[in-house]
Image 1 (tube, helix red, strand yellow):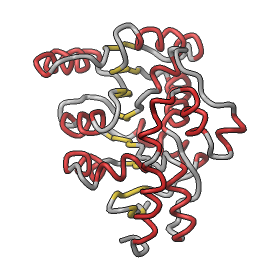
Image 2: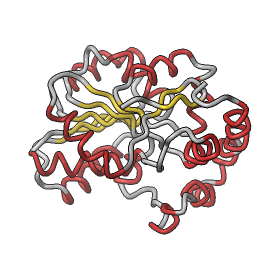
Image 3: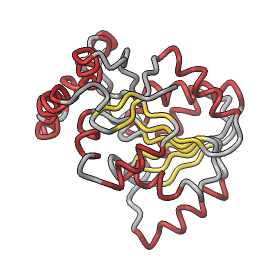
Image 4: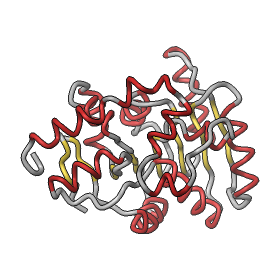
Length: 242
C-alpha cells in the first residue's frame, strides 16, 4: 500500500476494517514489523527531529491517528479515509493475540502501571499465552537490562508506551535487537488499560472530538492542542503529496 506524504511523513491510507488483515499478516509473517501512529503534533515534530523522521520512514505501517490528518487529507484530496487510532489498533492486536494464543509485553508507564494494565487485559483476553511488563522510567544505563528482559520473554507483540518521540525512536533504534513479530508505539494506552484514564464516549470518538474530551480531562494538554491549527495551515500550503 503506497503511503500518502503529509509534510514529508508517510502515512498509509488504511481504514479500521482493513487493519484486521494488515495486523494478522504481520503476526504471521516471520521477521520484525513496526507500527507507528502519528498525529499532527508528531508530524510537526518530525520535521524538526531527524531521529523521529527516520523512525517514521522506516516503519512498516504508519496509521493516521489524529483527526487533523484526516481534515488536511480531505481538504487536499490526499486519500486518507478515516482516523485509525493507536488504542483501537492495540485493541485489535490484543483480540488477534487472544484468538491465536500469542504473547505480549508492555514497556512503559509508571512503575506498576503496566502490570495493572496486564491484569485487566488478561481478564478480558484469557487466550493470550503470556504477558509481561516493565515500566518506562528506566535510565540509559538500565536500557541493556530492559532489552535483555524483552529478549528473554520473546513476546510476539511489544507495546512501547514511552510517549512520543521517545517510543518511536526507541523502536527504530533497537529494531534489530527485538525478537518480536510486531512492535507498536502506543503512548498513553497503558493508562487506559490500567483504568487510570477514561476514553471519550463512543459517539465523541466517532465525530472526531476525542481530543476535546482529553483536553477537558487534562487542561495541561492545551499547549499541545494549539499545534492543530498551525499544522492545518502549513499542510494546506503544501502541494499534494509534497
